Amino acid sequence: MEQKSDSVVIIPMYNEKENAAAIIDAVIALPHTFDILVIDDNSPDGTAEIVKAKQQEYPGRVHLVQRAGKLGLGTAYIEGFKWSLAHEYEYTFEMDADFSHNPNDLLALYKACAEEGADMSIGSRYVTGVNVVNWPMGRVLMSYYASAYVRIVTGMPVRDTTAGFVCYSRRVLQALPLDNIRFKGYAFQIEMKFTAYKYGFKIKEVPIIFVNRVLGTSKMNSSIFGEAVFGVIKLKWSSLFKKYPNYSK
View 1 (cartoon, rainbow, N blue to C red):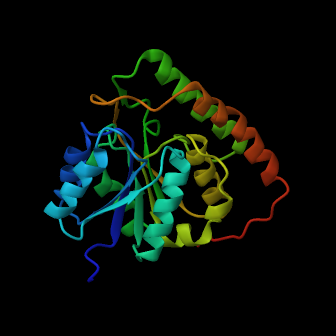
View 2 (cartoon, rainbow, N blue to C red; view 1 turned 45 degrees about the horizontal axis):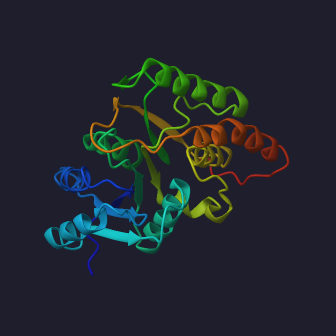
């Protein structure tokens, strides 16, 4: 089959029937051609059936990987990255299903990598202040200071270290040791950025406005947050004993 796009957007879904059709429609409608890969973790609410209907509506543009159950955000993305590499996409995106990430911002993330020379671009809530809408103040502060904590511990010059709205160029995903990424929850996002940083890849933050989901339920919980807090220390400690290849241009 002829390759239609240089870009694929990975959208993990679990019980996203309220958002699945709309987010697919919004991405497909963009002026740049983005293909979509949905990773569904056996949602009991029928999410996969909605995605299959969209596959019929947009032949060759929407793809679906169905997994046996909830296996963690990190493993979903790793599976998606491998799928993208196998299908020879140049740019691979991470995006939430719930419209907390504005699909229009995919264009800015793409531009940062495809035209401005970044190896990896991050949709950042904190690069120009705090751009979060509809979150309780406690959660805003927790997220902001968690990101600052990660920055201090790791030395990584990224303002939004836990961001889940990211574009990876093919060379990054080919280089990173995907099978060695250990974390499953939000610490996965930190580990991917930290590893790319240690490899010398050029990372650019693109300012976005993050809007809390309107439909469906959040998957955030305290154990996910705890993994991020303690995982960062493990990441930094283990990095002291590793030699990283240098991919800086």
